[in-house]
Length: 485
Image 1: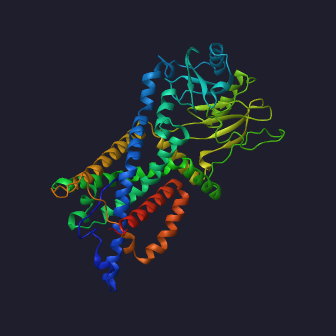
Image 2: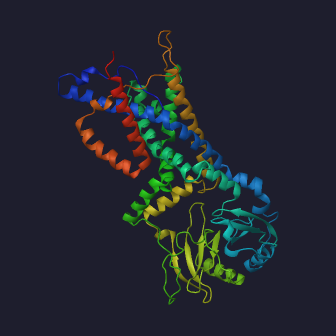
Image 3: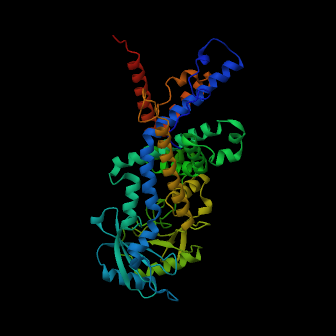
């Protein structure tokens, strides 16, 4: 949620009594205050130093949520047809028109229109484009070529630019560290803020749902800012935690750990066997996970008429809406037809088709996905704003605006808590006191240390930065204790 500290004598002051001799319930109660003091310190420093990364992620994410509308504004002539007809032309005719206008490269795949006002996409593979493709947009009712764009996994140049801005600030693999760092710390900040706010228990208002979910309008100054900051954080908590988790699944270091978890839990999507029955050296799932997503290398020998035949078989197999058809890479492999429907209920079925026999040779059904694979897939699609259409976009935009507001309120609290007396004026409020861990109960230390170590392994950037902070904190403490002349 953000950066603030609760430095009232009752809550967060390092009570000297907690280290005084004594035992029993009173001593134990005082020791548990150390947990809150530690959370205050962690929440404060994470907010101060990580919030700038979160702010950048929120701003770039907010821009990305507008990508579909911006695409229509910039590329509307290619993406949409001027007038929807009754029956689309055969795919073979549309492909022939696209290849006549763009004979370069090889035919990689064809994507059918998701709606009656959308164009057909003929995807070409060109070696000079690397992992990008050239996508030719064809009016499905007239077979007129509407234009061509260099795309990346089906994304337009504008969406690709916005995606790179959000993921890595156009700095490549190095830039990805910023987004992974933000996602790694986001859930720590949110969870810590929730515990602090829900554990305040100051009067009937704080114990009521209204006191937790709504800001206190009667408060003034820093109390009012804190109330807005915390109440907004409660409303945003689920969305922020979901964005943190899903963002980490395709990050560099934490994403690798997540992949290991999927391997151990057998949580991957079922593979589509693209080898033809009786074919030589079948390679199960060679194109399974990414087949049908514009990543194939294409084949120069694909007969345009086969696209219509394969689409017919795919429709009979239950694949409706937008379908991507990918020709086989060799004579021992089958065609791939992959459904891509992000509206609820979602449909991500895939089938392998023998075009010569007109039959399905293998299938991968969404209903057969393991639960972990389904959650991962839906989470990523939701993070990208692809689920449920405009509803998903609006929800992401609200979360982004809310996060920006929470961060601004957090920094405002830091400023409002600054000393203002003439003899000790400061630009910002003081940081929480050091040494809170000394007041932690022994069970918390016994459980917490291994848990933090495991968390650092699962989220390497979180672990590394936390170790760096601990090193700095210890070094700074030793500096303060140095003897002075």
